[in-house]
Length: 74
Image (cartoon, rainbow, N blue to C red):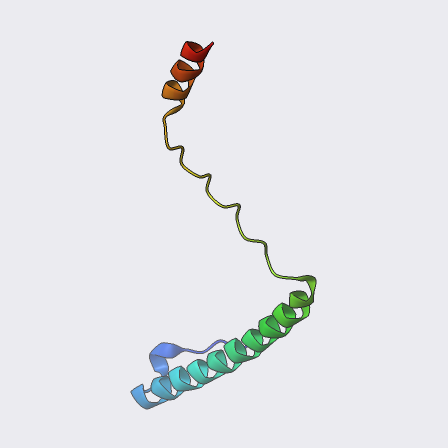
């Protein structure tokens, strides 16, 4: 890759270099995004991730009260 002497460049040349670099970067980002979307579509045939298990239901009485009730009944 050719080295560029930025100090020797005029403001107009630097601005053009910046614009060219931004355009090339946007082009490469778009190409990579299309690659990733294609890979995601290819992987989607294997199914969707499963949902997490539901949270346990809350007890109407605390466990201590249930143990006391069971002990009194026995």
